[in-house]
Image (cartoon, rainbow, N blue to C red; front, side):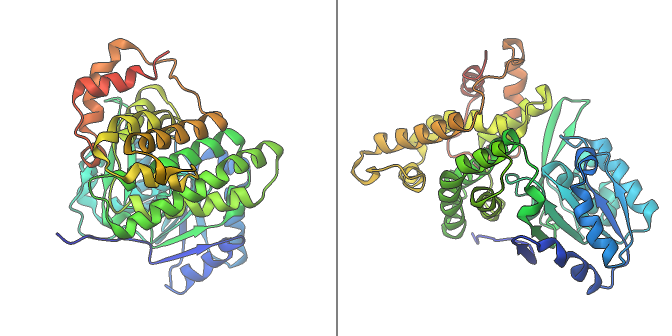
Length: 387
């Protein structure tokens, strides 16, 4: 079977990268942008950094910002109507995973109206046309939604999140400008950074892992391990330095990898926690990652030794396989502890576990897990984060 790599057509990296946005719009003779962002980014003038660049270039735009932290079916539907009403012919998505995920759904449906029922996009949708031309500008260092073929939508009626996987949804252009991430508070810096680590480790250990994504994942693991603590320190101090800049790059590199091989049950479980208890996605991933690594360890061969080595654990070559696997799990748990990740979900209840486990096993990330999980095993993983 052939392995596949899907990446942005163009990506820009580094301070001031947002200045490249008007040129990417103009050279395609596009006339007007729908800017997709969220209310907080608008309130705190983060979105304005990009719209000011559009204004200076004389590019008209309209704003759609009614996007929740976990974007809903209604957010996507309203966004489709906003796009049509605006007369826009392209999208500029500004935000974390929420804004970019909503923009992906909007762009796909505009060009594939037969998928107007947002639920029909779950899993691997057979869309025919690429989404509306989209430029994605991340404001957090974690989701890598700007470079992935995945997006996640919340279905409030059914209290679940569903994952959509579609090569037609990837933004043509990613603009990873560290200045757009400068306002991230320490908690968000920590949780999104651990989300990126989960992407890298789950991507590296997934059933579909192969050489090219492996390179991305190991480099992302190294960069995150070396820089996340410093990035959180900088955020607490109100500083912006090398730690936060390195995390902007690391999360993108992780996205280059996992988007092409899939994830595992740490993400499957995290999706259920977000849908049911509004647990921030990065926090949920961070809590589950060392637990899932330990559970998966017997099915990972030598890969957790490589993870431990990439995380800077000394003496990994002299360890036996069980010691190396344990060292990797402990290094991840220690990083999460050092950056302030909680260890329990207070709202999680025993009576919810059966339904949550069913949802996790039905999640699109589950099949990639290196170990085939049973319902009872997934329930036990939930119990490890109960109060």
